[in-house]
Length: 420
Image (tube, rainbow, N blue to C red):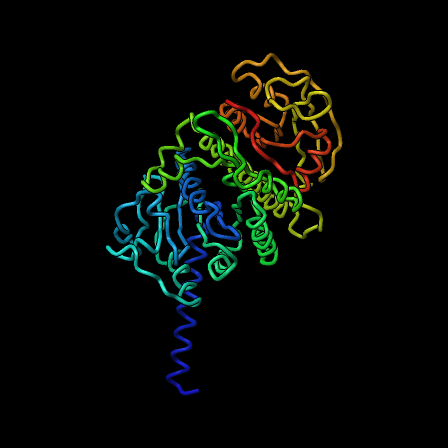
């Protein structure tokens, strides 16, 4: 190899190392990274990614939305996003497009100029480089959530995310019919092969509610996502109905439908967001316990970290199984765990169901986790304000079974059964 070629190679290695360092520095300021993916196109993956980012921002979180679907970017149009990259920061890096004060967006379409229909004809290495640049060459704000919209399948883009962002979690979108579920199983296997944790499955277009008679129509069969989630031991984060308002809103770049309580889609999507928040907070708490355990025992004992923390898990019970509604059980079961095992149980009759009473009572009883079938948003907020982890949409099982599933990380939560 000539001296010039050797020098060029060394310079490239130096630039790559610098870029990798910048990426890791930026990722350290992002608490949760969620890759929204699907096995096939046309299942509403980008809609779920866009609405998830907006819904999290509406709840006060700082959110980044990165569109890594480089050949078919659709995020800017769904959001009605105008404008371009922000001015360079103190470090000379551009800032993503500001969509809201607490939400930033980046998509390749932002860089295409006026012709939004131009095709991006790129091979793998170029796509990988662009994704890395989205992270290293932009000055994202400190984020609570980074939502990444990936193209369908298991190609370069999701593989790059898995390699560059090793702590990213996958949210897999499907529709109920088998042709979609077959590809979803490939996405699940992809995540397992690259060691990417799966946050859960969202079943989109589950049913159509007739706007005239209110009858439910199963256009693409039903419960396919739920069945696949149960078979694969994964959480079902929620089922979203097909709604013409979603289609028209997406075409118009209008996201205000998320705040419409009269739409079944909006109510169902709110429950998906609840699940995402609860599960990311649960993961954060487990990581915190793990870090704390490592500091207390730097030599390492080989024991599971989650087991080192004692927990009191409260569950509303009716007829010896999980009650369908948080506020009206026969009693609450308080199950104590230690070292990843159940060590005790105490049944207590709850006070009368009045606004704000149960969350405060559970806090006074020492509950650190509440597992419920259905629960209103206000109760969830009050519990979390008291430092209590909340899991809703849990199946109707006996409490010990649910606690064991929670401890093993296999608790499959479905739809929040509370209707208010």
